[in-house]
Image (cartoon, rainbow, N blue to C red; front, side):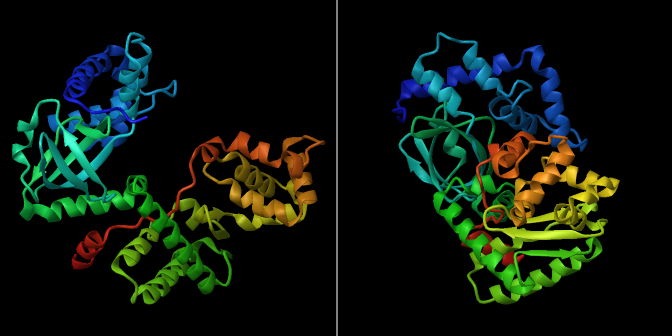
Length: 381
């Protein structure tokens, strides 16, 4: 059930946020924050106070510690005196909405904004009072993090404000976020549905271009083949909407060295998992066709790597095993030294044991659609 918003709740939210920040400043969190700083910052020039405050807010609300919990979850666990309403609100803060917002105007004490990434409208409050919003006139832009307070939202951490004529700064940041963090786009159910449709269309083009959804090429040919494919996509999309064409651009990326240096690479475009690249596929494929090849070190190592490497999704093993489940059973009996292993009976449990992260994730498309105005901005650039 949504929490009803009132001024008392907003005041209490501010009090709890102060207590949470104080809780997070215990020395036991210093090392964890240093690790986050090193991971996010990569040794660039020193962060200013504003940037550090934003990073700290992320650390407190979203970063998962070694025990799998966030700081805010540990705070709630350490305070059993909190009411059910307060606990619900605090735990809701793990789902932060961030990014550039365009200001639509004021509605009483609330600021009404539209997120440039997910294109949803948010009613925003500040626990410091509505005077904070004097800096944000209609058509200005702000960069902020929002935490839910009932059916409205509260500014969490500092915010940047840009004048209406600085919209390109906001658009550029929104475009980068849309392509780098598609989960932010998918907050909007319509955007998620559009992304699945874009991926379906892109897969159809892949199948038409390559003749199937699985193609095997030499590693040093992958970049050229994908460049040809992208040229084919652009030619087909030239008459499509700007939003669709921008979505297709997200398939452009830099290939990792293990793919480029591999003797063979399988490019598989699955309906759900999207486009994936599988290095040394021919060796693994041959082992599934002839399990006796596992006596050779190269075949054994690469086949075992497909199973043990969590970055390799279950898809490729499922596909290879589906060709001949009996031979797949022999493959895993020899790899795992389990003479009673049966792929049909034990295969899914095996994949879940070796690839837990894949099964924890909610399936998401690999294509990130952007709004028409962001696509138009990208086109102008």
